[in-house]
Length: 179
Figure (cartoon, rainbow, N blue to C red):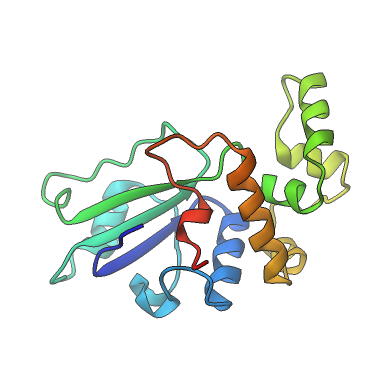
């Protein structure tokens, strides 16, 4: 993945933020913390808020905005004044970032059986809470602790790439890792 001169990385929730922090702190991403705007991942916000907070500064080059989210359909439309200055790339974590825990636990088959039984409540986070008994699965601290061995996280990201249905024009966490 080609990045522009400046990089912003926006995350959806605390689990995503924890995963990004683990990867940044272990120098596993194709960009460093120092290369990020304000040297931190950015909490998900509306386009107008992103423009007001970050784009009113003078940048000599373009910005790559990496959005780590689970929605394939969520739009992030910048105003005409900024649309040519920002290259938006969506990093898909569908159905949820908690799939990385299921994959790290080698429980994909169990999750698929569970998913088939419970059509209305088949979220990976619910499986992690009910079956794996990880009640704080969405919390920053839990993810930091669970993936304290960055190699376990990298293995789960590789497995996610292998088993997920990533569309041709989509990116996953795999695509922003320094392999």
